Length: 308
Image (spheres, rainbow, N blue to C red):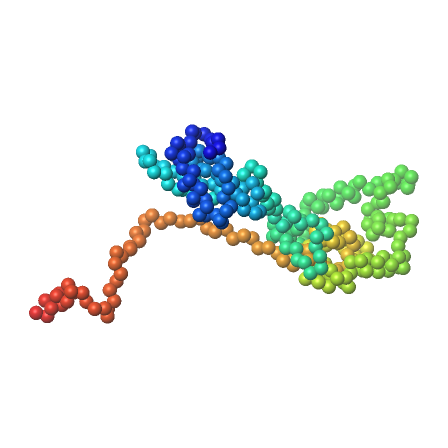
């Protein structure tokens, strides 16, 4: 027998010598011919020893059959506890399991695939439904009124040379700046149509991904609107797992990463167990007698006494 490997105690002598008992138990639990040489033993505690045998089964390189034997206090008979197959130091193990949400990478989504989004996804938040919109005749708050007065006080008249490059609020230049028109040249109608055709061809309604999508980008929470006239038909995708992430997409485009395509429900939280210690449950010691059953001898004598 090979040298013993101990954990915290010296192995029990009788348990350490029960190699034949441990081998017989391992051979009974394993397939024929897969239990190899005895490779060591481990002291699990007082009068508890685990014997380790080499595993010769295909696909379990480095694994060992572990048969645990034990002995009661002051007893000379060693009994079997359990037999299991355990990996050794050089065992061939499967890689650690990684959830699908961590294995998924951008570009893995294909036509017809659905990407569920968690209800608590940090990338999404409740949209504007109109319920929180103030009434048309609502009074402006005092803080907003004071802020507007402060902005009016900051506008100082003067020659253009002494003015800042920021146009005055309410002027034609400021309105043009808000619309994105304070540039030397802007896109013409032809330029807008060429860009729209190019984007529609790449990420439009006629692409295979959009044809297999459960819904369009128009109702997706990952769609970021864009300004200008092109914003009426296009937006920017902000879903990192979508093939169109960071791209301008048509509102009629779609993919399996739609935010509302397959929302995973929250895991149900079971209530805590309640132990009622004030109630007594009655358990009969014998089954109840049927009304149509044959009376026993004692019952028959009782019936005769009742008639007499």
